[in-house]
Length: 145
Image (cartoon, rainbow, N blue to C red; front, side, top):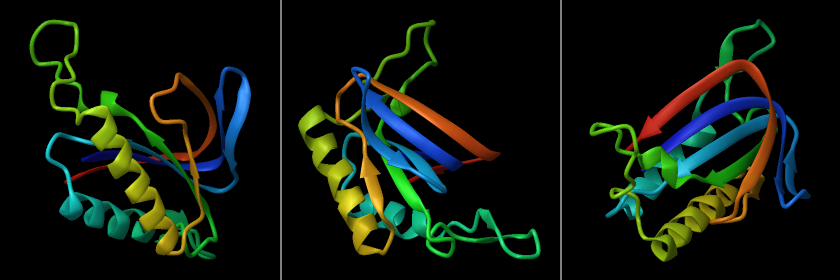
């Protein structure tokens, strides 16, 4: 499983021009599910993402988590994070989990993040999504398990 975590001032996700999800201060998390991912990878992401201390405290130090700043998460499924670009110029996605299983894991990560105390907004699994985000920093972290 791979996640790209970006700190944002706000973000909005649209499908076919219709606003589906919006967040204010928080994190946009692009999540790629790899073949064979399961409970161990889910638990890692659910523990790590809300605990990442990537927001500034009152002294300007990067010392607060999304939970500490009462932020939100926009969780976006993105199988292209599993692209293999080692051969030629056209990536293959052979390591990406099958859509039905990937959707199940994506939704489980989201509900577990909610249970961990962070409000989560979702993308539309498998849809052509347009995401507008106002990056804060920018501050981007890549997590992989």
